[in-house]
Image 1 (cartoon, rainbow, N blue to C red):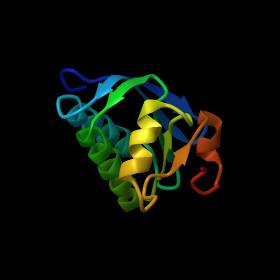
Image 2 (cartoon, helix red, strand yellow):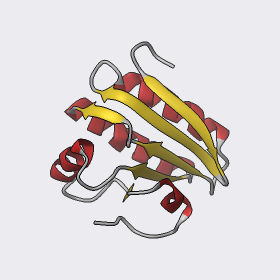
Image 3 (cartoon, rainbow, N blue to C red):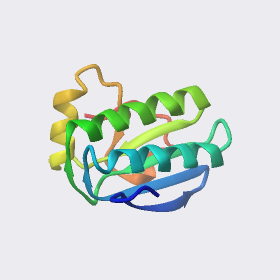
Image 4 (tube, rainbow, N blue to C red):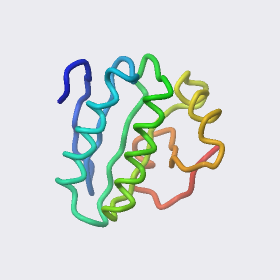
Length: 121
């Protein structure tokens, strides 16, 4: 992973989870881009990639842009993408304010990643 980015890669029944730890900003966002690229390369079409932000300390606009890039890359690869972020979490507040079109598929729990449900409020 890129310098400054801290993440933990885990397995899901049909894919990979990436838990982001610490900040997600202009310095660490390239590390998330790299981790997402690696995960998408390892998951077959029809699988899933979860980006777990529950251990995230801070998110800047550059971090939200990285999440948009991840969603776009997953769509192109035919892989389901979910962002795990709890209601009331700082990152959720920022994402909700920036993602007014609802492009990011948000869930509150990791087990919801394999569900076919829509974005949950």
